[in-house]
Image (cartoon, rainbow, N blue to C red; front, side, top):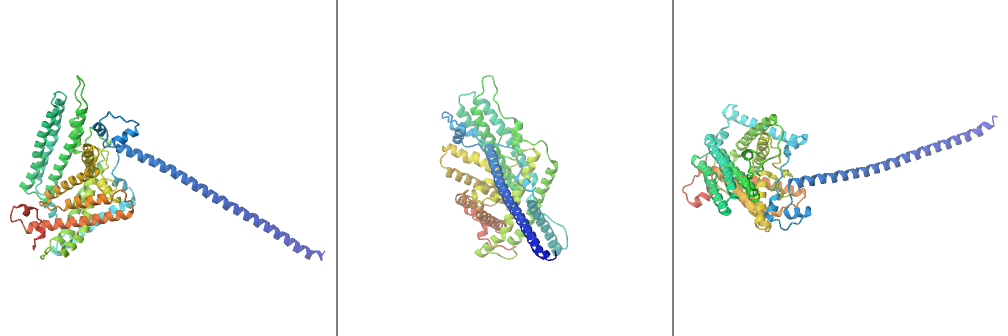
Length: 531
């Protein structure tokens, strides 16, 4: 018994070792199988993920295509192809009139973006800069004059003589409210009753153009020049003049073709737009007339109060930018004759205030001001602008910067030009729109500042046209977004620099005559002044 024990002990250990090896191999096989199952599961998850993403992408593309089709009608020839109809007897004019801007309920883009905390932080950064401007002004006033009182003398000067501005606005508004509406109503009541339709239309149009030229054309200019209004008051009168003209044209342009096309049956009255719809159109934030627009259910008075506060804050923001960043540069204490060095330094000094003023004007007017009237009038379509800051081409920038004005120029300028030319000369149509826009912008600046210095016209009609055709929608690289922003920075710097120099030159070197070259030649080119 004792001799067998040592021989059985190794055999017993071997059997245990074999069992442990089998167990470990079994466990290893199980782990390998689990890993294989896990890999298969990951592969199936990836396939399912790709399938779901593809379905979501297809659905999003379908929704986007539907939204685009609803917001923009296709051209007449494509519309007939899509509908499977090739009606050759239908006139091109009736096809053109079927398409138009479609209004729908949608919020402003910044209102949606401000719901994101990251974007809202950028907004908070601009508020912090405004507070820094206030503290800087208080500190400088305390050091220089020993007081902590903020004086907004520049604001009070710029918005001076508001009584004259109010009278001018009331006269323009009363004319726009009654004369075009009732003139068109009188024309429509006679159009289908007399045989001299062309003579009636030409006569009515000529008389209306003469009255409009006197009231909306010459009267605002006379008011500005005769009363020597300050800059902000000038801009109020001029911008309202342009707005009333564009609104009047849209109302006539949208209503007259419908009256011509729809002949009333015997015993029926001609359907004419209601006076209330026209009155609503004069105040709602759009330049395209419709008898009805999508409306919100209620007015958000808290939103109105906050938006009004933002507009007032933007006024003070602009004041601090001019006082702290522009006036110290362009009102020197020593003579600064015109030279290449002073010009280059002044341009680069003006880039920061220039781009800040651009963003400020965009936020104050295109977002706050238009949303304020949209909310008060329960106007639901708030797409006053698009994501112009993401543009990689100037063509897209011009389309998305100011959608309100772009729609007017597109439907009544570009598209009507194509209709008159039988859809030829697309480049000429685009160029004509640029020229008209550049002339109107330069007119507003010339009348607002009180001098002629066509910086805006050259940047818009020359460089803007060149960039529009060279940096077109084919440019999708982020590099072109950088180029666009760099051009905006430089362009704003040039405008702020040249207009500020000319403003002080006009003050310190007044004109000595009334000749043509004396009026159009910039004074800053030859003026050397000392304050």
